[in-house]
Image (spheres, one colour):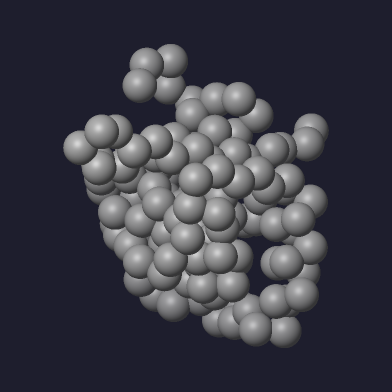
Length: 138
């Protein structure tokens, strides 16, 4: 199955910005990424190197990579990819994410930190082996 990630931002008349991120037309939910690293409980962002982009980077990588790899690479992904996305709208295919991640393989440390293993141990097999559930309500 191919995955397509899309982000759209809307700014209202008062200058309030809201964002929406979709994967294959369904909302990309932050719950699993928040369980692993809570950078931005208020939502995803992109186009700079802050906490919202960090949460988005981790959430996308969790769809494409195994969790330990995603945890090791998401900050770099944030700076190299998410931070450079158009602030209004963007589209990204899972193939592009995998290509980027493959180029980072020499950077991976397979001696996982104890804290990462402890967090992963708390998650169920379903949470680790399948993409996050998409909620029917938003």
